[in-house]
Image 1 (cartoon, rainbow, N blue to C red):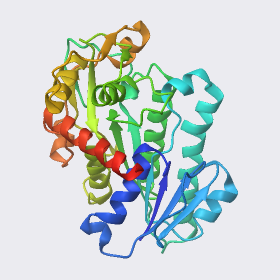
Image 2 (image 1 turned 45 degrees about the vertical axis):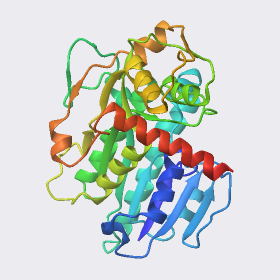
Image 3 (image 1 turned 90 degrees about the vertical axis):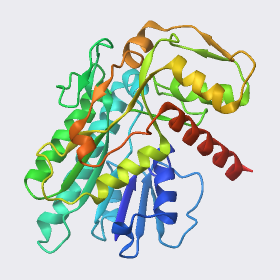
Image 4 (image 1 turned 90 degrees about the horizontal axis):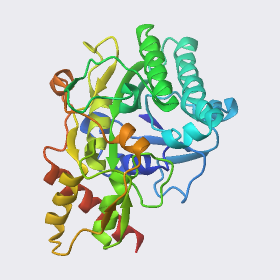
Length: 331
């Protein structure tokens, strides 16, 4: 099975590669896996013979031709430019978050058009809750809420969802879009994410560092651990094609919690007795865009088998295990 992962050297991408190499779902492990990894650059060479790296720009036709020389069975499209960075550089955001996935989906569809015997590529798109735009924290949201993106990032994600659904309608692709929340805990070095505070509070409390949180303690966000994110991506990849909604899109179940609730859960897990190393300095723009999420109902996604972390305590436990493992690998 030929699997292509874009953004493969990123936070989620690198973890997905490791999961596929060590714990692939039975439905994907039935055939030998060959992983084609695509990113602008890679920090380390491949460590497994079934892995091939391709460094370059996703919108480069020559690169896509090289990667797709062997028909692809499954694609995880994770590559994107973070929303805050895309807002500062609109041209770069357009290229990375819309034009690049358009080029990828068209190239994949062409694979099917050129050969009726070629596999219909299954595409799992990492979309974003940014498609919703501003939300009212006092009113529950439903998974069928109409997107009203307030950032170019959310607009481009929504447009890509629609294009993938249209290719699926035409029988050229088998698409599955997942609207993902903030995934924690991203590496502390990462920048460009307006929601970076969601990860930074884990690093600060775990390492006993002082952190200026750009929201109030009462700011509410949608939370998901990296492990849970991988579970949902792989579940999307193994869902039977029959009976999928025309939208080919799900709002994955999420945990809704305030920053203060998560901080308290982290302190309890760490056994911290000292006052928190957080100072709250709310930024009105960040709080408005990333700290006013309401509870959301996702019955269709849950019926399809998608899941959240279960509880804030469960989420915190998974994140701390992830960070301990990352520290161990770095030694």
